[in-house]
Amino acid sequence: MTPPPHDSTEQPASGKTTHFGFQTVDENAKQEKVAGVFSSVAQKYDLMNDVLSFGLHRLWKAFTLRLASVSEGDRVLDVAGGTADLSLAFARHVGTKGQVWLTDINRDMLLRGRDRLIDKGFSLPVIQCDAETLPFPEGHFDCVTVAFGLRNMTHKETALAEMRRVLRPGGRLLVLEFSHIWKPLAPLYNLYSFKLLPWVGAKVAGDADSYRYLAESIRMHPGQEELKAMMESAGFGKVDYFNLSAGIVAVHRGYKI
View 1 (cartoon, rainbow, N blue to C red):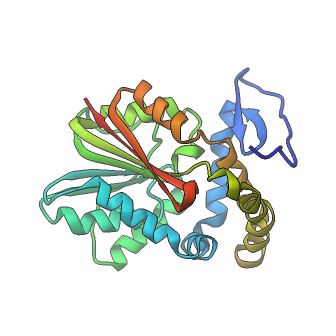
View 2 (cartoon, rainbow, N blue to C red; view 1 turned 60 degrees about the horizontal axis):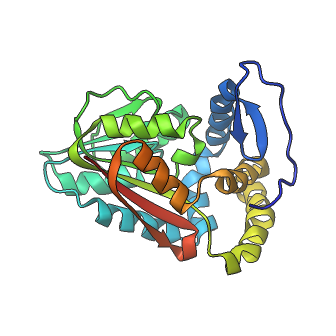
């Protein structure tokens, strides 16, 4: 991990702290801070995804979709689904007999996703909720996905346990998330992350701080083996992962057993 360029610590009110990028903050404050980031970037989120990943995020999501192996009639939950990229793709696969639920904790992101679904001719259920307390019955879904959302959650273990709870036995979880890059590329990636990312954020989205947080949150997120172990601790079996783009991102897959 790169040493924090501007680490700071806030006095905790609850007695418990967590990370917000390189900052140490009160647990109860993280959710509000993350909400501020995504409310700020919601309007240009899709444009910035294309610009900053050079379009690769589309290939990463297509690979996740293929691993998910959903069929017509399946029930799919898209956690932290934001602007609905995966929800749209899943809706085309499950057909009219299936279900796809788009969820996100951030209202601004969710509204963008809802509007995209409508524009594409899909009427899917959309619900604002916290991944740590999912409002669904046990064993309801065949597949749960979370793309680029897990690292922003305060209690990742709790969220993973909730995703397992709502899966049917044999159902699968797919986690697409930034991960730890191949070490020889780390210096170049650090330069891109801490210099170019905030600069482009400022020029295109008018928000350097949110994209600085993006770079920092990636560094604080568990690596490939750590996340695999977390999923196993949450009760998932047959957990494996696939590195994409030299480990810039990884797709983890686990089954409810």
